[in-house]
Amino acid sequence: MKNFEIKMQEKVNQIETVINTYLPQEEGEQKTVIEAMNYSILAGGKRLRPMFMLETYRMFGGNEKVIEPFMAAIEMIHTYSLIHDDLPAMDNDEYRRGRKTTHVVYGEAIAILAGDGLLNYAFETATKAFLDCNLSIDSYKNIGKAIQILGKKAGIYGMIGGQTADIIAEETQQKLSMEQLLFIHENKTSALIQASMMIGAVLAGADDIELQKIEKCAYNIGIAFQIQDDILDIIGDEKALGKPIGSDEKNNKQTYVSLKGLEKSKEEVKKLSEEAVEILNNCNGDSEFLKALVLQLIYREK
Ligand code: GRG
Image: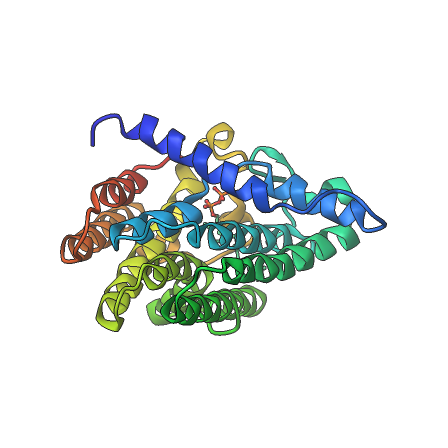
């Protein structure tokens, strides 16, 4: 796609404007926790989940503001998961998005609360979609369905489920089968991408068959994204990534790369991404940018 980088940056700017609109004011007795929440969410990041959400919404013909609170909500949930994942009880990481992690700056207790705060505020924010007084009955139903998808894919049948399996695998050091590894990736990583794209589809009025296609497409994107993440943890550039590499080896973590090797992993990223593009080709609507985004992620360096 021509000028992809420029278009991508424009879209990131638009997304950040939307996110900023929904951030809580840093005031009151709870000011410290709100500062920690905003510190993390404003640290940057690629904003891929709101981008996948908005682009899927547009592909299915959506053009209303109802998508905006959900774009902010998904980034809040993603950011909470990073704050908690970086805690000493989990990965114990000192850098994220090129900055000191939240617990390093604010202390562990406030970091836990900031994560909790973002998760709750995400749902408070998503329900603001109901406040538009010109909504049709179908829109009400779609917003309800979108909130349900958000809860499920971020929860025990999604990201929290995957993170639990990941932590148990790390603690017990039992050898993982490919099926177990894919369970972890599907839930820890694909689930929030599935939530993003499915919410975009649902709010634009996509039917159940289209929704299933999008769920599978986002599954592939998520697995490819995770394998690429594991590849970058070995051969990536620390400056571009904004965090140190080699953490999987340090934590004795089993990854797609440790199971299959670097070359096979790279091939798999490409194959999964091309399959995702094929699914998008079979959906109605303009998916030119979405497809370019998926293909660009194969070669991402951060
Ligand atoms: C604590 C419930 C809980 C879950 C943690 C997000 C997560 C699950 C763990 C972080 C570590 C990790 C490798 C997660 C897989 C998903 C992933 C690659 C997240 C990083 O997403 P990016 O690259 O981050 O989109 P930015 O900073 O660009 O937003």
